[in-house]
Image 1 (cartoon, rainbow, N blue to C red):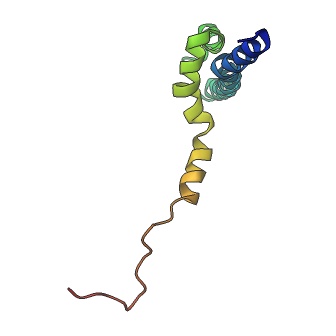
Image 2: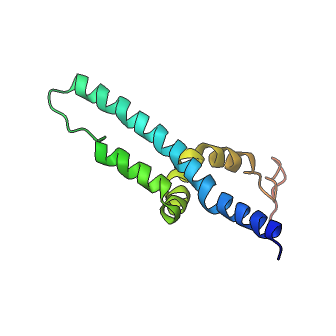
Length: 112
């Protein structure tokens, strides 16, 4: 195996197992953090006493989950992807919800 072939193989391996999961986690956790921040601000204004959901530890933990190699792969698959791509998968499910055996036309009932 030449140096170029080894470089190309390592490039694709790193792209699929580190960089794409990291980008997905950073995007998903950024959206989740922003949504949690808005929710905390809204609850702080409306309630006399509240416990914040978003803390510095949560933000640092999400960042570390996105950056560490094996953790970001697992987080991308099991934590971020279902939330980020859930609407897409529901749309695909509705688009492919076509019965293989079509419904019977009215008035064509069979008798055994």
